[in-house]
Each structure stands twice: as C-alpha cells, then as structure tokens.
Length: 296
Image (tube, rainbow, N blue to C red; front, side):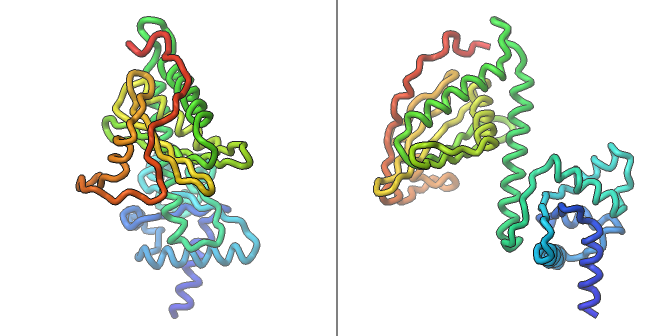
C-alpha cells in the first residue's frame, strides 16, 4: 500500500511541475498550503522526500529541473490578481511558471535537498534585500538644493568606491561584506571577487546588489560598515574595513577591525582571533571627497 501511495504522490507532484518545482522550504509555509483541499500532502518531511525522489527521477531521465521558492502569501496574492482559484493544482502550476521567471531559483544538480534548501533561502534573501534597497533609493527623489537624483548619485558614488576598493586591495581573492543599519532592519550584501592571474572575476548580479546596499547607506547616511578579506597563497589573509560616514568611507583602525572580528555579537564575549590573519588598516583609496557632500 505504501508503494502505491508513493507512486500516487509522485504523480500528483509531476502534474504540478513545468520544468520548475516551487518548493515549500519550511514547516510554516507547508502548513499554510494545507488549507487548500487540493494540496494533498500532510507531512512536510514526507513531502520533501517525495520531491527529492521526483527530482532524482527527472535527472535520470535527462530532464533539467529548476527549484524555486514557493511562498504561500505571494501565491495567494498572485491568485487574487489573476482571478484564479488558489485551491486548484493548475493555479499552482501557473504560479510556479511565474516564479521561474521572476523569483529566486536554483538548478537541481543532484545535491541532497538538505544542502540545496539553505542556498535557495539565501538566494531569496539576497533578492529581497536588493529589491528593498532599490525601492528605498528610488523613493529619495531629487536633491532640494541641486536637483540631482539622490539615489542615482549615491549609486554612482558607491560604484566608484567599490572600484577603488578592489583596485587598491592586495593581490588575491577578495570577499567583501557591506552592512547598513536602519529601520526596519539591517541590510547585508556580500561580494566575492576571484583573482585569476591578475584578472578579477565578479558576479555581475552580486556586484549590483552590493553597490545598491552601499549606495543606500551613503544616500541615507545610515550607520554601517564595509569590510574586505583578501586571500592569496603563502601569505596571511588580510582583513580591513571602513565605517560609512558623511557620504564616504572612514578607515577603521586595525584595533577596531580586530575587535569587530573577535567579539561575539550576541554575548559581547571575546572570540579567539583566527591564526594566519592580519587585521590591518586599509590602504588609501586615492580619492577626493565629492564637491558637495550630502546635505539633502
């Protein structure tokens, strides 16, 4: 009987896949979908096992499947906007096809779902952060004194600073993190730059997201910081950074960087410093401050 149930479940799922599967990643979202009678799963763990089995089967058959994050609230809004019955498998299929174009997705590459889920959630957080920062930048409007679009000017300024930071960094791979504190929450963006024989390789989407979050911090003069870690063979990693200050970056001292990395954020307790790491002051960025700072 269990074997028959399993086959039935796979058949139900297969009907709702159009090259992309919308995945309910956590228990809370799964419970939200159970209010629809046409959603026939009653156990999240069993649901994930069936999805994984189906993904493996499709991969063996040579089918390429993309995994998207299925958000029940977004689904309900989608159905309301399109005048669709949410309690209908075909509505879920349409929403999943919509996600394939607009939402965070990952190609299924044979890894266990347990490994893929956190990556998919991180991707969703990245996209939401970028969309939120972009919206806030757009809302800032023109400068009252010079008429310049504040968001665009801040983005140009952030782009320039990012280029200078990457250009002045010592050779090696670079990992940058920018955090901007502000209501309602802290926004964080990361950027990886790989050094291949002296040429830097960047992910364009990551660079865009990073620049947008930095621009928001500059434009709103929110508290924030930017740190960079460089790694090269046979040399200690170097970590240094800046705080966001008056439309620019103010260097952190080596002691401030050390304190930031060697203090537990939750408890305030000291953490042992990493071995083979230099906490240091940043190099000069070689720039002049903008003619009119930011008196908007």
